[in-house]
Amino acid sequence: MVNKTAIDCDVVVVGAGLIGLTAVVALAQQGRRVVLVDAKPKPVYQMQDWDARIYALTPATESFLKTIGVWDAVDLSRINPVHAMTLWHVDGDSSQQNPLNLLAEDANITQLACIAESSNLLQALWQQIDALAVPVVMGVPSHDLQYTDDKIVLVLDNHASIAARLLVAADSAHSFVRQHLAISTKVKDFNQLALVANYQIEKPHGNIAYQWFSSHETLALLPLPNQHVSMVWALARADAERLLMLKGAELALTLEKQVDYLLGSLKPVSQTFSFELRQVTARALIANRVVLIGDAAHQVHPMAGQGANLGFRDVIGLVDLIAHTHALQDIGDQAFLRGYERARKTDIASMNVLTSGLDSLFATDSPLLKRMTAVGMRQLSNLPRLKAFLIKQATA
Image 1: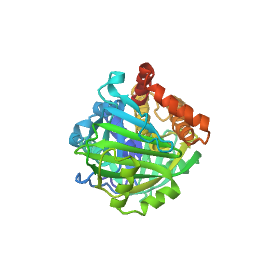
Image 2 (image 1 turned 180 degrees about the horizontal axis):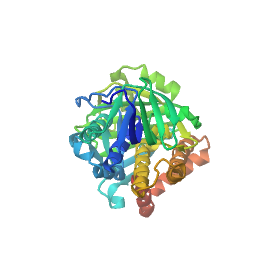
Image 3 (image 1 turned 60 degrees about the horizontal axis):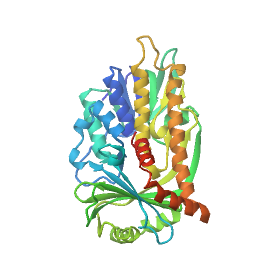
Image 4 (image 1 turned 120 degrees about the vertical axis):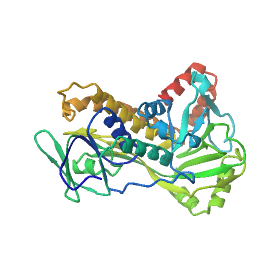
């Protein structure tokens, strides 16, 4: 750990979550002097039970993690490939009729995604940070931001200060940095909760991700190793709260019925967790010597399963921009950082439109739109080029 003295560096990263740690590793590997700061103590990971917080990583994200050496430290026995997706538009009792099947082979790729636990990825990232000997200040909240002529100074609650040319804010949806700089956000509340839990299943999942769409409700069962699946069930707050009152076995029976016993009996192997669903977008992604990434910059509906990948693309965009600088380039210069903001705003806006649009489409009360949606999903199965295009867009 770093002593309570003034520290000078190129980049200070605030936030030791998945996206913040990835930024630390990638920037340190570029030869930048990086310091990591987080208000929480450094966690200790014990890879025993299955982590209920999981991510569907695109091939592009997996490739990036391989490039920066993180994948070498991941426990691959706990990673599961997704070779296909089966999607249903649920309207009345037609939940198991006319599904849309998207196969990796439709786009000439080996897999659509891979499913990884948060703890597995975080443990691998910390191994890289330790190997790179990155200075870290953990368990100390941030207190203030100040400026000198050519640096931003992060002042901590313990009176230590860190001066850097660039501050990368990856400090969650409740970002201290974003709030301190008075960067406002655009918020859309879906009035939903997402329930997450893991189950042991009776029937093999075949490395298929299953997803059901209905009015303001999305249910996904994502494949995990050793005959397990991860449930992500987003539904209206009142309905979610009723389900949360059920015991684990009772919720499993409810889930079995909801998916028409597709995977046979389900045995809960984790607690059920919940989190609120909101679309939150920072109105600015940069400030004077500051850049926002991950949840500090955006949150999206989990319907498309792309929230984490969006954050990884923030990191990729930032490190690529910095990698192509010349020796005298000031990486904290706001004009320089506008290239990052322009590129990322486009990607974030596209994802917001996708997730909000899908939620609105499946929530419609219009019988005509409902029929058009159902017909559209059926017809898509007969359009291989369009299916391949959609798959490539989703896996980029």
